Image (cartoon, rainbow, N blue to C red; front, side):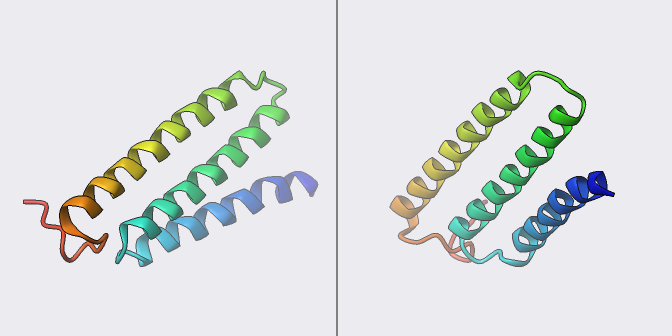
Length: 96
C-alpha cells in the first residue's frame, strides 16, 4: 500500500505538469517553467526508483546535470527571443 503511494504521487504530479504545459501556450516563460516542473517530477520518480532497486545515485546526478543544461538552453532562447522580438508571446514569433 505504501509503495503505491510512492509511485502514484509523482505520476500524478507529472500528469499535472503535462496538463499545464499543454494548456498554457501563450508565453515562453510559462512553458519553460512547466517543463522544469516536469523535469523535477521525473527526477523524483527516478530517485524513488533508484532507492527502491537499491542502485547508486550516480544516474540521478547525471539526470540533474542534463536538466540544468536544458534549463540554461531554455533561458538563453528566452533571452534571445526577448532581444529580437521584444516579448515572449508565441503569436509574435514566426517560426518560418
